Length: 215
Image 1 (cartoon, rainbow, N blue to C red):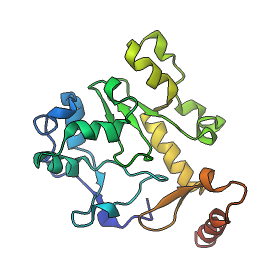
Image 2: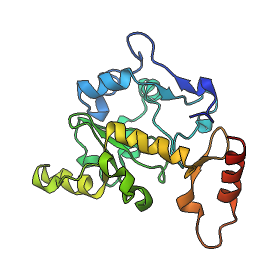
Image 3: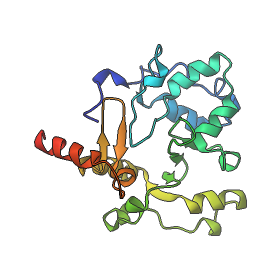
Image 4: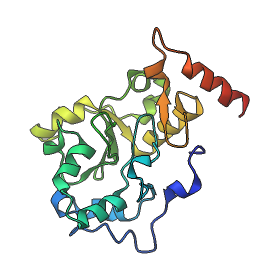
């Protein structure tokens, strides 16, 4: 993510983030494996003084800074409301303990769900230009959740585009490299799928030309 200032990416200390533990995250009802994973991940930092100035890590997308969330939970923030914004209001009640959302934003923020048991990332509302791209076919999982998932989980699993973990992040990287995902500042990222519509103001084309000219 070359558009991000270096200090926007924060790495976990030895032993993991102290603000992430099963006790602190008890209201989210996640497995020890999920908690251990969150303790040892790097994050796109939420600025402490200006939390609304977190940088987007994908188009229109704020990734969860779970170590910052842990600090908020310690100050009595409601963990159940965090499930709602990180897993989606329509499905959060049916997301099991071994699945964790990777994003944390407003109503229109994309939802990415990592199943830590299966090693699959679920992307509800993935743009069709991405999900139907044949070059990404070997990175997707084409199973039938109705054949194996609990009844209350099958719908959301089936309705999401399903990716291998490595494949998911390769797709995000490829979208940046192809300038389908375009940083407009150190904080904001847009995509061509929303802007390349009849009547668009030509912003995407102008930005693509600038990035091509300057490497």
